[in-house]
Length: 180
Image (cartoon, rainbow, N blue to C red; front, side, top):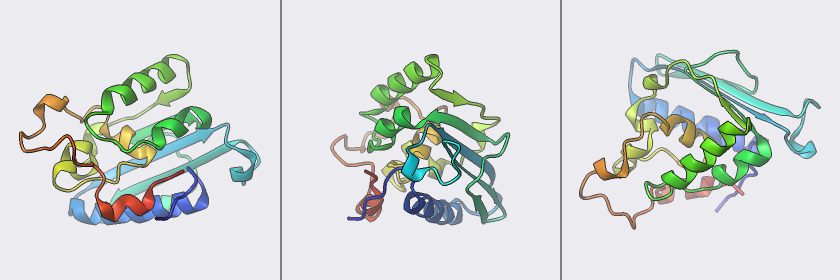
């Protein structure tokens, strides 16, 4: 199993690959912008010397434009302190861990370690969110999974009755993208 350091060049390449794959699965008509900014990054990842790693993607007409830069606004836009977000990014998301994740994120938001400036999270297609993990899971081991899931994730009680709480929300095909 390959492991990538969070927000490393290999992680960003894997993320881009996942965005392309799931954009195709979402079908025609998807128009979505996403931006993540990580501050206080470790020196060995800080290729610009400013303590920041950022990426954004613009999805339109089945195409994904991906760059390692920030944009001022996006449908899904977040900024997080690197040391704060790494523990959450390492989690494999499932309905069982979401209350813990949400509590951690709320604490980070209150402390200013997590800032969301999202314009329209409602544009995120169902295939990109945790509830679809029952049939077609988004690879939930990246930080983006949490940001995409926030308002769209229904309470665990509304998951289908056939959803097994013992079943991983991350299929074996995505396990090679688990990040250290």
